[in-house]
Image (cartoon, rainbow, N blue to C red):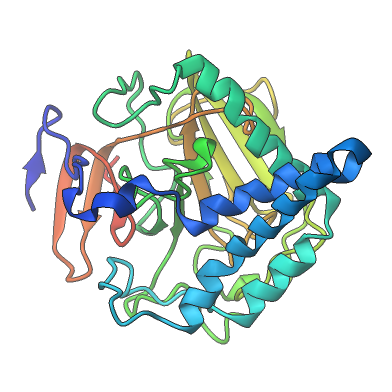
Length: 335
């Protein structure tokens, strides 16, 4: 094992100059957000021309189409060694079609889009980035044992959702076995997944500013999303750690929350268990750091973790006093 000093965090993001024009253009999935500009056209007759923006919703299906018809130019991805229970193709596609009829999902999509306005006003277009964000608190991983980062990272290419500002630096975490699989059996039930029911802990000392339980864990997994979800986060906990630094732990297991709004929590204290609630295709933990208590009006913040062990797909492990993590890595807290 090797050690990385606190003054030289591992995986320090750098600009990928080879991406050229592509790195400056919005991705198809980000263009899908323009779908919500059609809602005022439906509600206000004089603005009915805005309904044409609904066509942008077709871009939301691009990941499924790309998965069914892969491009021969696609480069290997750091997550290729991972086998998720979520296949590309029919299941996510059908789930997304059905969710277009869910008013809770549509309304939260509108709030995500309009929430970008106060963010841009706060930062005057100079949004937080790893090279200029001064993190106040040392955060540990919000889990015990070794987990796998399947989505997220400090760069645009690795980003969880670059165009959704609150989730720009978010992470999705699962548990994988020695074969790189996130599940046993056929992966049809949440109970088939290694991370389902595993402990989720506070990443640092703080005060719970929001906590929501009672959202069902969808009984189907493996690519299906709950058509009756009423909150994208499912069951969640939001913790204030410092002025302008809030963590969000989402898709938690129903009935597992051990904290309530107003509770003070300590670093490493269990707060809930990993579940399959909300906008989730299979059990996983969604974690993000943000600058505002509101999930819909926040700017996501790049977060490096303290006291971290990182293991690559070949099994080589390194320990770090402070490090960014990225999709494809197996990570564990050394605390």
